Image (cartoon, rainbow, N blue to C red; front, side, top):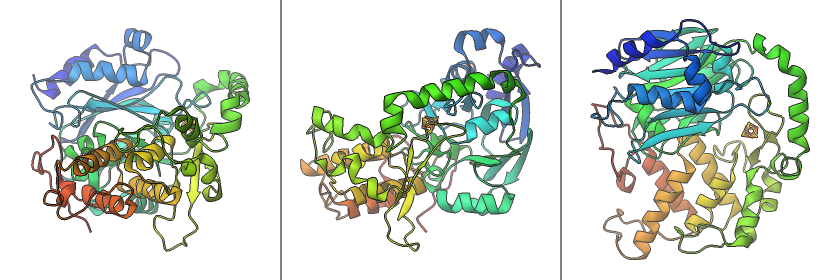
Length: 435
Ligand code: SF4
């Protein structure tokens, strides 16, 4: 049974009306035929699995054909928000689910920013995508209406340029009335460490979601509509103030998350000897990456939709406006660990810059940092040599080399072409080289 028959069988069982006050529809998108259908998750599914990740799993279970491979266009890519997303403070994150082209098992990623909440404000809790678009495409959801647009002009763009171009061309303002999930060149090139960007830094990461979206030739999904209060949220507003006060009153939020973000975890991990240093060969690292050393480069904090915590540290290396990677968003603790001790880098400025590059290139810092560290250890042990790396000496702590390798990976060039499961071409997808 093909994906369209599976979707038809599923739709036949799904209600056409909301099953509870705050429920949004599930949108089924056939990218190849540019057709959409929608219905609502059955109440039994909502009761047993809630929404978001749980309902995503239900849809994947019902639609997956295990005789296919993860990047096959018949294997769906599913976005999902939860029943409280956009309604309750700090409930701003959403999930992205499929069959992982990287691990070969379940792909289930989570990210915040504004897309999960704005998707619900457009009346949708889930989007189920399948079929390979005939050409690079953009889905634009305006006040609940879905349109397919040509994305040819955006192909080859990474996150910074794409966000500028989409805001200019569609006339929206990020965080006010517009949100997006999108892929970069790395996703177009089916790089297995590529994610789906959900904001300047927010990323659906792990398992190769960028490659999965790239295999469908879908560059982005944009929501564009006025931010409004969900009518069903009104009765809960007094409780929301109480929840926000409770959140802000907890010591970890008040003293750490709202002030420096997740990098506060670096110091206790270091003291406990719980770091993954040089591909986990050692367990601790320098105090030069403790959160207080980032203070001078942190102009402020940001957060997801209506979250009172604001746990995202912004950064400014004060290298001037012409430095594309001198300002950005992050790093989170994971990035600090993967691009600090894991690669033998002890400069906080270098880690911040690499963080900013990964955000632009759409690379998952955990997967990318781990893959690089593995290659560095192979080189350290002589299992690979400069004959395998194109003459590059993979020396721990060489931040400039790491920067070069990020661009090579994004463009699938040289050593960056190496990939454990994805071929250089898949279903006829075009591999785009570095500009
Ligand atoms: S700003 Fe931080 S705490 Fe708030 S929803 Fe986003 S990730 Fe969670």
